[in-house]
Image (cartoon, rainbow, N blue to C red; front, side, top):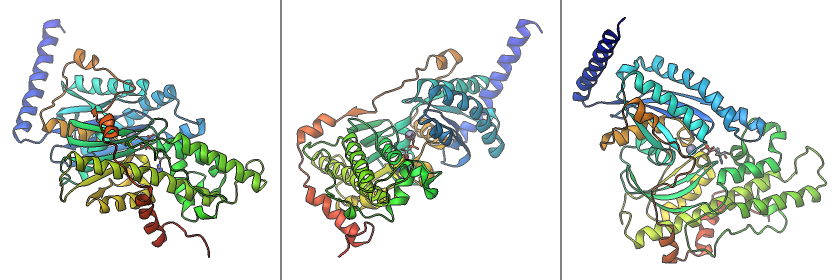
Length: 431
Ligand code: KG4
Ligand code: ZN
């Protein structure tokens, strides 16, 4: 085949694709394929601009990495490379669509592991260039924050969002699809990392009931039968109460509980792989301490928003709780009490949508598409999209929150937890 014939055929195909897309666009429904590979989950999904989920596939590597003691980026990249082709085939099979039926590819490009993000973007670039589609770069945290609007289209801007996961802890005001104000973030580790580290110290995997659970779910399961008041010298640490901001810190809590576990191990003369008999009580204490710290910051965020008139003064006011740790039922109840007191409603995506998935990326692509962000087109331009390990999200109001110096009394937060005790969500001290 001569070069000019090949060029002619390429152009003819390009024009035919453009025409078929134009015809569909006139029907005002666009279909977007989303790709998530920022950490250890390979997610691919297709959603249209009406919010119809056309297909989704998720391949998790977490069990694999759990055995290695944490996510190993080179291994994660290899697994993503394999899983991406499985997941992409799955969504085309499930939806009955072809690449040519799509309008754009949305890809997580930040923050995350450079190696794994690159794998996802390369995959997206290959798909996009094969069908002359644009790539919409997606910020992973923005995708978490907007996810609940897929399930609940009545969730309107502005709303507060608390993202709590294995790698992040962010409290922000979401003003629009592409406008965020960061009110607080963790100064050290993320809440999921705190739970996972404490769970490892508790050796929960040596318990038959928790063998296959990661740290957070194991703590939640054990805590149901635990009572913090049964632990010796139990005064739970009150983290950062002296700081009148919305930032978080979990490393102090981690040290506190690691010392407590060491003391309990000695008190009960526990040896080797055995688990302390008070494991459930410690788990319950961990959960309460975490929930109290988050509740304190959320309470202050509501007051800050009221002071600056950033949220509607009457209903509906919303707090979205998302990220892996948001699957925790106790945390959901505790934060729903904080919301009630602030005349707001707690919105939690269903647990499977709290964790990383392709749907949230496809949905973020849809949200951006609808406000006219149509992405980047052409192999060269797509190849120039940067992947970024750490990128701040939105503009920061953290210092302004601290300057406002809003006092939240510990007693006010404790009140919510006394209610939970009354409802038997925290076990009471006997007699
Ligand atoms: O968002 P996510 O799936 O991904 C990462 O950030 O990696 O969050 C994972 C984290 C883990 O630390 C896990 O222990 C925690 O979320 N997690 C939970 C629960 N389910 C998962 N923490 C508390 N309670 C749960 N039910
Ligand atoms: Zn995430």
